[in-house]
Image (cartoon, rainbow, N blue to C red):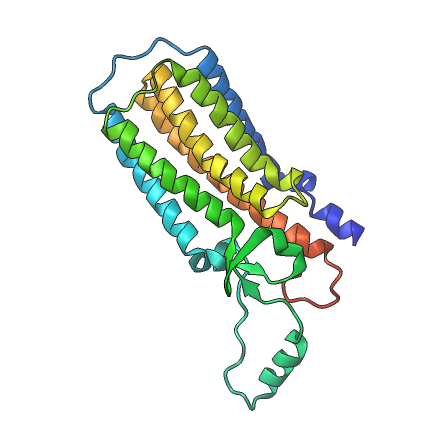
Length: 254
């Protein structure tokens, strides 16, 4: 088991190392840009509405993904295994025998104790803690996007503070997976809220300090890259939990 864990560790995965390295370097670049901003460009009247028109739909797509995580379960999370339809078939009987007492998918996580901090329950329904945090963060960010980019909301001299707070939010949101192994559900929830709010905070902070269309567009691309990194780290975290599980037979361990 230890060899399996080592072979699937974050330090041995070049793809994840690449994503993390680029993401953290991007945070560093944004920090340096905030501390030493270039001469602000003359503001184009349509710069902010244009950026808002690009970033707003991204927030809306994030909200939909968080509301309907099962639609993405085939590519981003755990797949549900279909049971043979014919109740008299040998394959169905074999399926029942091999899957008896095994975890099922709830809240797009295996319904077992190893994922207890990844989900929360309301009555008889199970929800993903991280998705709930991302949903709340995206809803707040969408409102902030409308106010900042379309209703002339200004943050004045607080651009540097906004960027610094955003760097902490995104940074801790990414590092939660390799560092937070036994965190409580509320901690996961808050880290994912702050991850989304952090990205938005960096965007409006940099926009205030630099007022550059090109840099804003680059930052939106970087935010998408941070999101890709977060999704990939989440997949890795789920796999590591299953690899460390002591259950002898489980369909989620591959």
